[in-house]
View 1 (tube, helix red, strand yellow):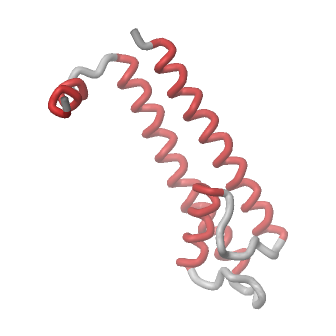
View 2: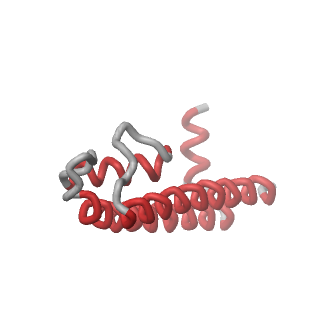
View 3: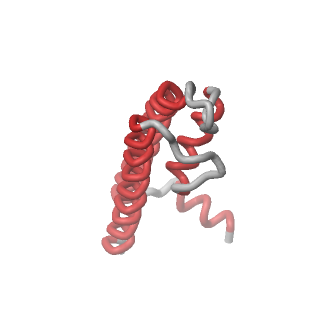
Length: 112
């Protein structure tokens, strides 16, 4: 059974390749958004004494968690710039999840 599934991977049709390409593009853009968001959050929040983001690692963790779950143990940004970036990250996450779900649904709807 498992061997049959692996064989099917080698026989991808055009629909499979298009879906895979779309998901890879989304992943690459999301990685770019993560990197840009990390830099923006770091520079916006690093000087805030009562905040939780003081290092690049804190900024990367916060940004990545916002993109994945829209919540974290780290306090929300305290600066106006940090809050704008945070809202942008959350909007990106919602759009990507909805768009990816739509692409997957379209693939299954058009599958033979």
